[in-house]
Length: 231
Image (cartoon, rainbow, N blue to C red; front, side, top):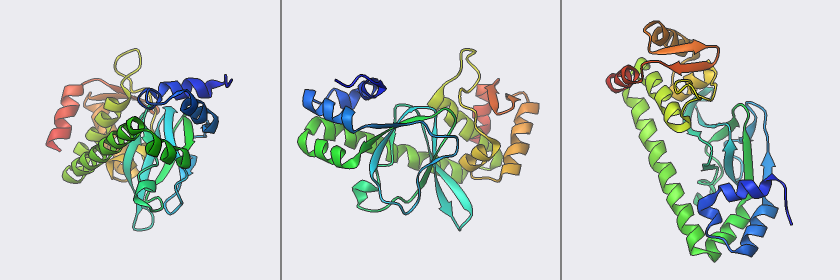
């Protein structure tokens, strides 16, 4: 019997876990690899062959696309409880994006060969998988559209609210529980790091947020929302 935290992680993937029989659950747990990467460590790079379905247990993961050589555009910020790194495999192509870890991140890797087997064997598993892929596509497209339609202030406000919606707050009800660097926020907002720094400072001076290192406390969510909408 497997007793390490792979079992608890597998059970936390409730939608998938509930579709499996006893044998499938044991196969799933045995095949799982749990990793604890350092900040900025790469899970996969553009051009590599997909080998795993990734499941974010804790922390955060940023997925970005390289544009024009050295410019990066953030495609998705992954929240705990979400899967990533599977779309390319089901398009029969290599990765179009690169995925890197944030602080205090734990990720479970499930071999894609096993995922294929379960999809073929279990209609319930397949349905959940298709639903999650559809949700991911819709969210990514929506966020990209927002960022292409807004000016700098609106883009950064949108990114902060996007992070807030995904991760919630700490016990104080205001502080975002993941601590993104200025360069991370710039990538998410499709702007330079210097512009992100200046705009964050402006938001702080206007009383919309409070900054403490990489911590961001939301002071005026409604006003920040208006900046996002009008940007």
